[in-house]
Length: 456
Image 1: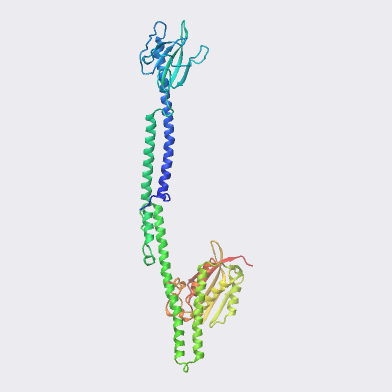
Image 2: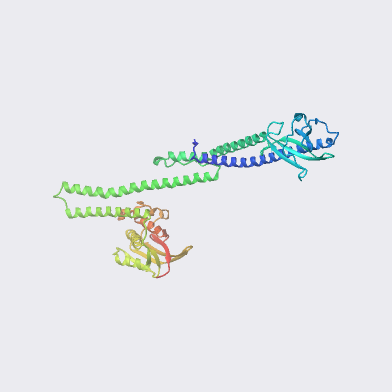
């Protein structure tokens, strides 16, 4: 249930829409009232003109009655040259002139009007229109017609109508937007509720995906895709933790057993042999911990110290330093230059060579050459090929996972930590490169591709 508060999208949208609707209604209402006021003013002026036209034909001497017939055009007085009322409608009979601004014969204006509050003999504010008439022998006289004062908005009825319609439209707009936004955000609220209930023990749950509202549907699909990745990462983390604990526990258990046996039977213990065995277990533990720390730094995207490096020279120097147990065939092209962190690339090469030595039968082939160009430029290629049992194609990606176990022919228990290939791929990705396994006539063929730069 969405709460009504100023910080909610529903409330803010409704208030904004109501404010805009109110402003628009006010604008149209003002224009409407100005039009209505203008029309009422014109009607009042028309009534004044109609009163003048009704009295004028009977204003000749001898024809003008003292009491004018009443009409719908308002109170009327006929005033002679000497400002005497000579005729008036019934409500003004016997009363003084209601206009106090009689034009003089020198005035050029035939028609004059002024608002009086009130005119003499009347109540309330009215507009008095004085129109000159020319009679003989008296000269100039006046016909004064009083009409109601018209406000700018026309009338109270028009004002109430404009206010009522504006309030009604604003209310309808606000209610409509409130309901529409609530209906639109209902799937979002359902997504929020489902996400709030998902815990580490229920990562298989997914948020509902609405059929309508493409934007919210995309949001739900993105949330579900994120949950898929989270579930996969969590499962991978659990497997990693389980395998890491097993790999750490195994040498610890072996060392503990050896030390306990030595303590129980000190006279029968071959101490040099036992010490070598314990040191071997410590070396294995140290290697695993070192690899775990390396992966942690790679996962944290630790900065690289890159410099231009001839890949062929770097690989050649590392091969010359090693004493392999099998024959190494080198095909190292010079002039293949990359920007790299030399220590990281050396670690990558060491991991590949260690892996190849553990599984090679008699030979390892190491190749460095310029690779096929990519869309973003040339590439440098490093290949490490062993002549061992090889890796089935369906396991080409799996071997780069951490602590992964395959068949016995490529089991990490032959001396590896189970993290070397995962570290190699992470280093490749950190250098904007790729690490893959490709087809070979025999054994496993690991291929590293990195962006190449111009020769030194």
